[in-house]
Image 1 (cartoon, rainbow, N blue to C red):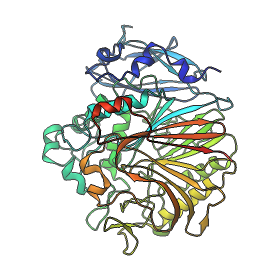
Image 2: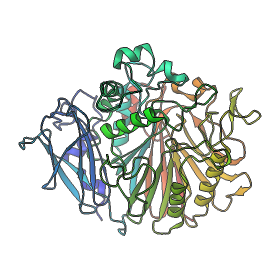
Image 3: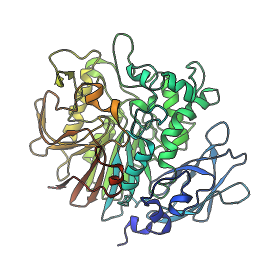
Image 4: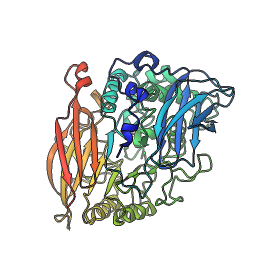
Length: 524
């Protein structure tokens, strides 16, 4: 059987995997003429493509996307015509489509490129390869993160393994406004020079705030991705910084759940720059953040599914937007979302079900918005003193989700997360009195693309990610604070994880980076 990524191995896809130094336009790098296109980020399902695009100059008339000869009119997402989205539904599963972007008069805006839909729910694909990373954001003008040019090399190296899809797990944007990190980011004097100041009493889009947003967010996303992912579907999850704050809580300020401005800023960034999650037949259309009238039909902003035939279902969930502060009944995700997650883990219609929450189980760095009550202390974490404003209901939901995963007989209970700016792997054998010895949880930290200096937990918090209290674990790969990514290969009877890291070596070494660790997990 021809594999999906083999269908995309033509000239355009090969160009996207080039490891040559990045230039202003992809035409100068890989032979693909980007024309007026500044960035392209597509996502797909078995029957639909959703594409987010921006251009170097505003388009006064509606651009057109031809998908295998079908015409899809663009929808403007900003006030000036720089940003557009294209929604192509009713497509065929497992089919490579040629995509052409033109202006309203049919003149090409860039070269044609290929993009394939996923298999149908009842198909039997043999394998799926995913590129997974976290924390890719950071504005070069602030100088607090890895330079965008280095992040591009890491992304290109990941793409060189020809993944079928990319999962970018949160923190695409760092522009914190009110938390302690704010003076290092969006509220600093440097930030005001770069982008200006937000007015929290005005709308984010359609007011002077829109220009501030574009100057703050655009340089963190557009030059990094450009058109490199045009033939690789992307799944962008949001985490705390994507709402323009760090997760912090004290008597002065509690950052989450997001207030009205944070919510508007997070939604606006997603609306302009990266695609929402397409609908899945087994995901309720009425979950929180789904089916909003100002978004493409039936998409979800916070809870997503990557369904790949009967081989795999990947469940992605934002743990920040809807967290509650209700003590023992507090949650990170609404109970309706929890019920959906547990239902999908209980159903036997795929060989693998993989959980990808924005907040990781298995580790704590003493942060407020974690599953765990641990505080940072003396280079580690402890529960000897209470964590202010932490909610015990969060841990209770954690226990319920892990119990549901361990109960998947014949499947590998696997969680892959970001947030902690680290690479790690641990086996969870118990949480409190709940025993997982018959099917231990594997929890993985995928590695950060953009972290540097102040962003490492050991710098900012005084500790790397550590095992929290109340867990029985075998930490087979203790957390390491290095940049990197994860290549995940899924076949019917196993999952293989290849871990990549880079921090202290010459930047040129990224171009030939090989895995430093490989783990194979087999279904029982």
